[in-house]
Image (tube, rainbow, N blue to C red; front, side, top):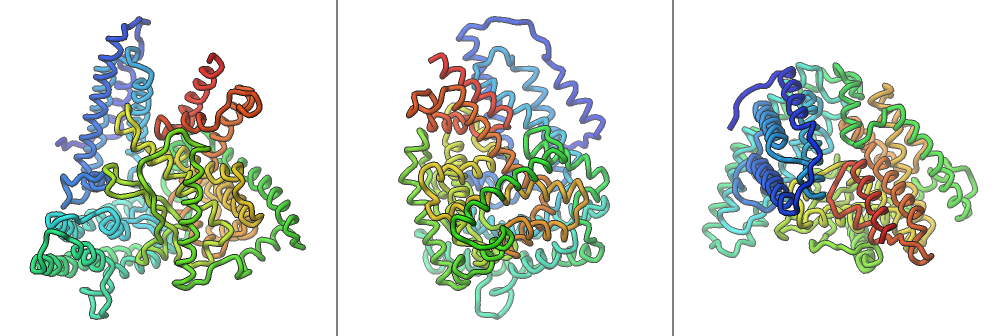
Length: 618
């Protein structure tokens, strides 16, 4: 373990030295044996470094189905992040020094380039490590800790149950580190806007509500989860189960409750100094940070102004397509009036009752199952991992986003999960059900992420790589594909597809508006209400999301537009599809997009152009 602090100047100097190493090489021809040997050496490096990173993250181990440090949490201290930086620099130097890029096969050269880019981004991002909100209404540690135990920590035997209890005891130290981080951010003026605090405080209080924290007679979320899991243990007698349950209750009252009470106290103190300024422009060097966030998220050099303009143009285009559907269904009135009609007419929503929520889930499952039967039309490669549909748990549904996907475990012990938030049924209209299921489930995130995890012949770091523009661009692209297959037969459902694309285009406008153009939260709310059909709750929840996740929301539309651009390029270059005498095959194109795992958009373009060239020669 390395314990040292690298000042910013030293980091920059070390990185420049690393990047300069081996920059100039004489052109050399290598034998197949030499290429195979050098590629094997490089892949051994990638495997070792990946495994070292896994060893440093008990939580990632659990996500991968590894139970090595099943009783521990990640170390989120600043000292640990500095160690990570030092290790990255050392590994980067080692790779440049010991691996001959020119002697690698094509796939390993791609791995080399991706690893270096990932490392360089990590080094550049080190100086911005405090420019975030580790407690926020979208994914903060206050709710993420409980969600991790409930959704990731599986209990198959008594040892697993004892590890769960150990993690409960470990929450106090975990939150102590979190509070230190919140204070470090406060000293730099990085405090969430005021609206965040009532949401996260209420969520935190909700986790320590119920038995054994009170005498309500209703179990808390964590006690309910633990109780259900140990009840299914095949190797534990009643006395052992009772012992485990007693130990868990003690951990909840003696460790979990004080941890949350301390965090709530810190949040209440920060709430007193919080302001209503929403964008990251308010931070020192906030503009530079936002530029970094945009580059990282979109994997492009597009500026905030350029992204803003793209968004405005796309919003105008989609409004035009929506107007055609409005006229098709015979609505009398302009587009804003049609938006109001869609927001307010009850026929577009399931009732906000248990029965209504069950009906939504049943419908979503049917959509997924129907598309599963058509996958051969779209893909040559399909994942082994299955997918399930679930509602977001009550303890985190109030502040969570509308829907999201959780990746499967690589050992098959956990399927991929499409989560939909049914807290308020007015935020999940029937007409968006199809597009939402296609994005989060099949053919969207599940196909891309599960296929990536199951790829062979590439290093593990690529199987679990995440480039937001690629991943979310694919998800949005997959909302459109079913239209070409005859789905969205109901014009209102097709409107829902456009509504979701409009929302992603609008994000380009409002994210850059908030963080680069000093828009206020109210400006964003008003703009979205005027320009989209989304519900008031949806608009409020999503606006809050963009404020605490600067830049992230720009990835979807930028990524989708690149995939569509490359598909159109390939279709034109290959003389159209096979049905019309050309060489373009949609299934092959999707294989090209997915076969290398997540990649930056420029690398994706290289891959597609190489495929086009090979097809032309064939």
